[in-house]
Amino acid sequence: MLDTHGNNDRNNEFRMHSLMNKIAHNANRLWPEEDLGRIPYWIYTDQQIFDKEMERIFCGPGWAYVGLAVELPEPGAYLTTFIGNQSVVICRNRDGELRGFVNRCAHRGVKLCRQKIGKTNRFTCPYHQWAYDLNGDLKGVPFVAGVNGNGGMPDDFSLADHGLERLQVIEHNGVIFASFHVDAPDFASYLGDSNLYYFERVFDGRELRLLGHSRQLIQGNWKLMFENIKDPYHASLLHVFLVTFGLFRADQEAQVKMDGTGRHGLLISRKGAQQATEATKDIANLRVDFKLKDPQLLDPVKEFKDTATVVMQTLWPNLIIQQQSNTIAMRQIQPRNPSSFILDWTFFGYADDDDAMITRRLRQANLMSASGLVSCDDSEVIKLAQDGIAGAMHEYALLEMGGRDSEDTEHMVTETAIRGFYKHYREVMDL
Ligand SMILES: [Fe+2]
Image (cartoon, rainbow, N blue to C red; front, side):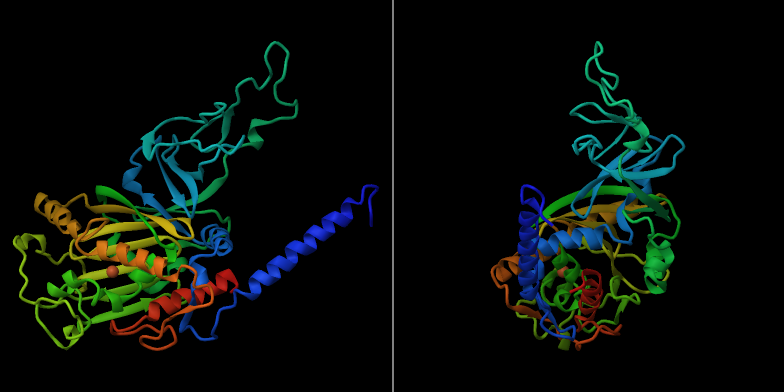
């Protein structure tokens, strides 16, 4: 029906135009194969895909890692971090209970809290000084009743209606997770049995000791980071340091495990000796005669209940739990846009570590983070992957090492966990 100005006609025309655009866009965005052996490159570059990921994956019914309980030791302590590309605040209220909310003033959307970590009893917006308490409730609006009878908010304005957007927050054995979703599942069933087992292998209820933070900007799509950790095939080739000193090699006893959905994954391996074998013959630049000038850099001691020396756990949607020898860390993935993400590292040990163990953990941490002897290889190759796929809108990656499905395996010569990740990704993203 037309209104007197013909606006409905124009609106309908506009709607039809956007719908046609959407259909045309989606037609170019079909996953090429029914099996899991291909990944189209547009998932790493397309802004619309990125926006949909932020909504469905990071605001969906899951638990995103946001910090360690030891970082918030007392009432009033807070930290700011990201879930997807949204800044969030996690704090302890006056009763010591964990609270979480979006770091965005309910007035005009301004980022409220700019510090990474701190202690406060109020969050006050820098723009118009709207003030919120540690539960995210709005407590004060300057000039709410006007000045000298002028202005002010309408009579029906109520502070109670304009608190910060709340998150669900849980803590499991010292690790804090948050969710945008009111119906997030309980944590144990979210992880599944094998992932919960390995999570509690590191987080067994002992008090943690924070050892340090490190952050890096990586010029690649955030999913490439998950792929990297779910990819033991590369680890025995790219990381000559690991292979040279026997920390990770394709012939070692190993498992790749996933949860029932494929979204979470585990690479589990056991250290071997420094030697050339069948597994190293394809590594062009391997030098088995290399020796460390300071062998203390690698002096791992057994500390966990099983014989695994490396367990890399990937938890949907934003966490890597790294245990390589005695260096333990959280790596949190913070997507910024389709072609870059922040990798936020938190190194830790346990409160009852002695001085020798703290030193050992810190020394072994030299393998990791932006300039790490091992992980700098990954950040560089992720950027090369992003560079290589630029403009390749109709091409796709080949993902057939170890088969075309996503079964758990007892070896490392496989890309099965990446296929598991994309099996779940396609369901969530409806692709
Ligand atoms: Fe790697």
